[in-house]
Image 1: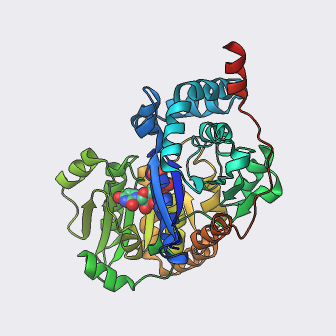
Image 2: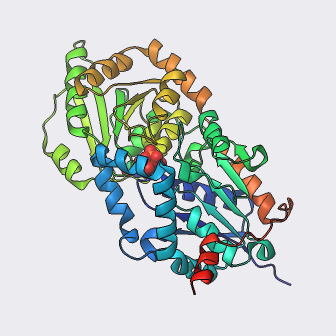
Length: 410
Ligand code: UDP
């Protein structure tokens, strides 16, 4: 008889670019390890299934990412146990049946969450489906790097994949057991798994100037941060420093921030600096591979990707809370720095570009901190669960607290 493909449901929400990129990375790893045996479906469960206002997380996130004070408040609110509890109960009340429809409709053999807000309600749904009997394994793959919000960690998951020691610590602090936790690194897309093509070749393919020092400026999937001022400062520092007639190049990737892209395209730049402006690119591995260093917000995905390309990393801002820990991850591992002031960024980064020695040293450190096999390792372990090579410990059917309450009330 023909074997049915195993169905994997990946739950996420498109807040930023990192969660979708991680989902794509995992899907690619399944396809490589288990060709034609796994069918992945990725769902932005909040946007596509939750009622208002829960379906507005993505624009709310975009707003808060640009207004860090709001973000900070939201982060702390979600961390504070009573408000965390209250919010979870309310979201469950509003979204439970819709998420249940989604999961029943998908009828997955395994569920992966790559988002901090996709643990609690989906796990409650699994409990009402009689998880002990149906044995749908549920795993979390944390896509933050140097720190992570408490909502990532749920005691009822079968496995929780963490990328780093600090995140492992938080998981243990949230009550997860050692044998639930696995540590490999962040999932990254296939273009980052192996050493890429040579810089010169990539530059030709991308239509960039060859033989010139090149910096890449990025603000995550949403193009967050003062990319304009940073590029201006960098371009003028490079123009001032390149007095021996040497040219240089700055590539700015604005992601989904169209307004920023238009603003940058309108500028004129010093003649010795070739500034190339892009919107959202789907071949970040090529753009990173063509560059000598990167200037970015402290996004976990971007940092993990840049490390596999051996890029020195200049961080220009971070979201309070989740991205804070990414700064020491870069600085303490010796492959970058953090500066807020665009002028200082221009000076330091142009210094990096001028000194091959400094660049090589940082590049080596970046490669040491990189985990190019992380995605394959994660997919292998999930595959063991999926194909039954590793049995789940039998769990008691912990009936949903909410449903018990509801039954009492009715
Ligand atoms: N990214 C991309 N194209 C772009 C801009 C960003 O593919 O034009 C990817 C980037 O390579 C990374 C992700 O989007 O994988 C951004 O994730 P990160 O965790 O750095 O930041 P977020 O946007 O999630 O805050």
